[in-house]
Length: 288
Image 1: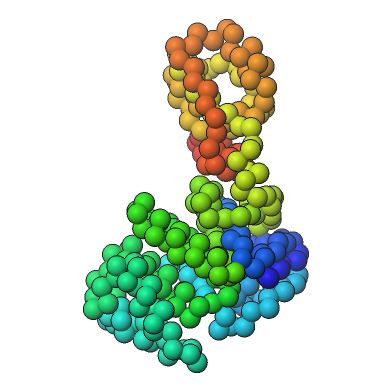
Image 2: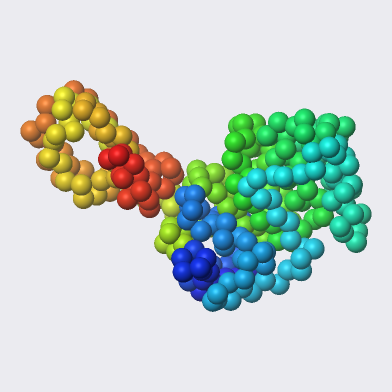
């Protein structure tokens, strides 16, 4: 188990994270979700002892060699082949990890003779995942591991990650996309401005009763609609789209004097729920 309690870190006088607390059970994939700059990377670096916290406790029962970490950016020796990179990484462990590396490489269809400098971004991330898992770590930390992947490769990664979960591994899945947690995570924490604002199971998250409302009408931007319970996604002179969390009958009453050409009301998905947590940031972007 990995447990964080009231973890706090300053950069000079700026508080990067504040009283961050959560725990991850063995055999659980736990998501840490937030926008860029929300504090996710600071949490990860503190867990890995790359940074020293100013306050708080980390209960980490895993030795350094029992941790596998895949950073958001993969920087490797450019002139080495994929095979040589695996051999180099293997030299850091007391046990021989090459069999596992080759097994994973085969599943990901990697060319072992290809040089690192010749790899595409997707191929580079495949190598990064192999390097993360080849020593059979007990604690796995994946930072934006699915970002920039095509659909097929995402499924391949998800399959390998789920296989590790089934072995009882403790997995921290760090992402800026709530949708990525849907097929993987058991629970997740949403971090905003360095603070955990919610810890919830993915199954519970899907039960949130949010609606996506799209209104097409002339000069809809001038309509006096209440901003309460609304998180705007798109706003033009003739179109308004927003996430709505209030009573739908009250909204329809507010629209009675608007000459509507089209009204579409849909159930929300996970990305809409994510926008709800960061409504100030997204509404500010729309107004800009």
